[in-house]
Image 1 (tube, rainbow, N blue to C red):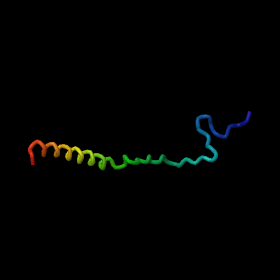
Image 2 (tube, rainbow, N blue to C red; image 1 turned 135 degrees about the horizontal axis):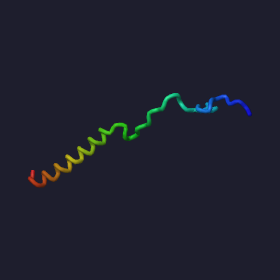
Image 3 (tube, rainbow, N blue to C red; image 1 turned 60 degrees about the vertical axis):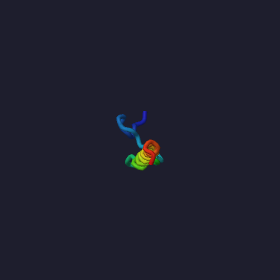
Image 4 (tube, rainbow, N blue to C red; image 1 turned 90 degrees about the vertical axis):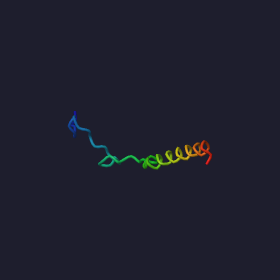
Length: 59
């Protein structure tokens, strides 16, 4: 039987591995800046509420 190069408790190195030395941060995509979406939702809610307020009070 041949002698193993790596102790049994360790993971052997992989030839041709393209992984980096540290984990990369995931790309947030459209969720990178959630305050943009929150502000658009709040603006839509305010516009919708103001429409009904103008209809009720007859401005």
